[in-house]
Length: 317
Image (cartoon, rainbow, N blue to C red):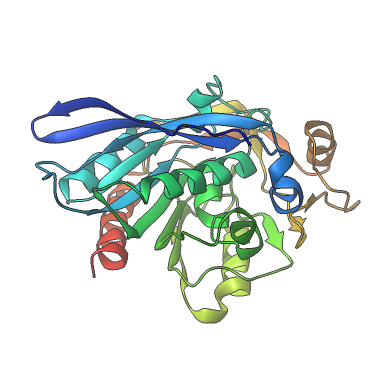
């Protein structure tokens, strides 16, 4: 069995703040079913991310950690604003580089080059590695993400998938921000960790209505929350003006079943979208091109406040 050396590379220490590039082994499963049923046979992939310790951190202290996962447009300015806010509040952060590790800049308009399954596996492999870091409190690690990264934050709590990857480590909380909730799991077993979804009322990229239904379905233990911001679009927490992205997929008319084995099933035909070709066929039944995204200043302010309060509540108490 090949032994992979997992490296921590020191990159910077500026004004008392330490950054490290952290490398680890992951893989390239296209679908969640690949993870659940055939994980050992997936093509291996080296992935990395950037660990940043809080401002004025000290060498002998363990810190709560927040892993951030970007969306289909990769890392954007407002994502870094969240990480800066967390660092200033005493949290370590980890910028997961799933796209850059695979030499991909964006998956808008395709959604096949880097998938939710790949990124969830990346997130757990990162958690396994970071749990060994001398400055990280392994029991106080949260995951947050935006859009596609929101799917990672949300479905990393889905137990059939999580247990197929690891039973050794778990996230202490999950904060998905405008995630795709239009994937309806037949098995509603999620971890006991707190989950809270933030989404815009008029988001036509990842619509809010399926989130309402999903939360009702999985909220048997009362640990899943949902905040819908009135009149807010996708990326409401950015500073960008409202724009149309003509390449982006609008999923407002989609609701895909998720089998217990991890197959996302097409509308109507119920065939698994377990390859790029089958996913393309499945999207023909309900997906449209053209989405709206951009800032809503009121929702943005509320979301940032909620995010820091959520992390303080779930990681520091």
